Length: 457
Image 1: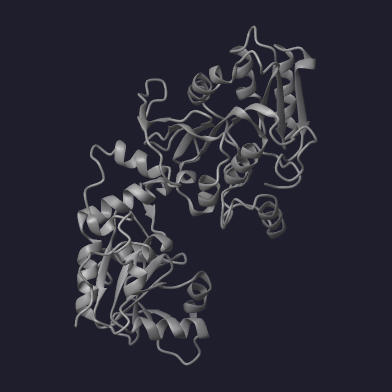
Image 2: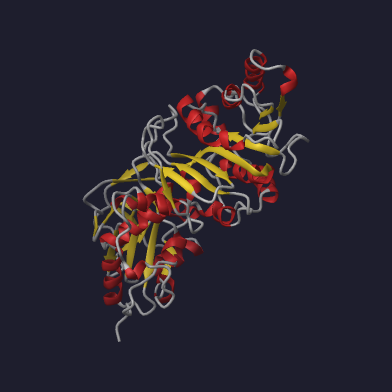
């Protein structure tokens, strides 16, 4: 989020700042479930906050549902034009003494009224800005990390708004936000999810199986309500107006898993080798060596040494799109690498490789499994003779003694249908448009292996 207000309504700035206004159906669903539970005789006047209020749609909808309940509305936004519209809309319906609007960045320049445990309801649709691809400066990222230690790594801006809301809501109050669906199981929010205060737990999760709510922004979303209720209801129905909710049990910090298993049409299939509650089973990291095939710096440093020649010497470069279950489509399917098309990409042998790239080339000449880092299911193939090197967004799995039989058994295990269902159930919340899921290194490292050893004697 920029520190000074941009002209948010041009398409480039909308993408950079995450400004996409919320459909009324989503606002109604959130308020229908969150607001009635906030009203009690001992909570007057209700204090309701939207920390990124835009034109005030959430605040106006909340006010319309409280005709006889005293309440005070608080709105913050970085965009002065949006805040002007919000003020005009509220003034038409509410006495100015019943609302407070503040032009600022709620995360980086919070107004004084954002005191801990001050609000009965915090609602809204905070901006989604990817920490890597967005316009967050290094200084902004550093300050956000300092202010929000519960959020780790490359977090979307929405993660920080959720963490802020957790601090600001009263015990007994509720948080009702529209968020990117990945927040349900993203590593960046794992500590946040695992360390909620006692008065907050998931009470509602609506994760529709569609990505078209916001024109121009194909993103899977979730509606999340946190509150004091001991149970959670959830739905993945595509239409919020007719969504049917069912009770689910959330017993871990992965809030996506119970949805994926409850609404997939079948439970996550039995697979003892993937049962994380069986501590006697070994993990992949205990028997194999796992590494990202290449990092971003290697990808650019590779360019001077890359040729498109089927008969040239050197390792064959494999992008994630060339990896299929048990096969590699190098030479059969064209691939795109750093904005250039290739049919037979090879890494030419050279003494001038960077140290990092040279190390990866040495490892790549070993027997290995190459995995696609972005796929709808687990996709991997065995490279028994070390002919290929994976590009960015692929993983390489080696055996400590280069045991190809053990690698073959591991490949069979990874491509088992139960393993793919496990993968979807645990990581599917981060699926992108086209339902491609990002395979996480931590997931692979902790993957449970079958009881029988995956090595030869």
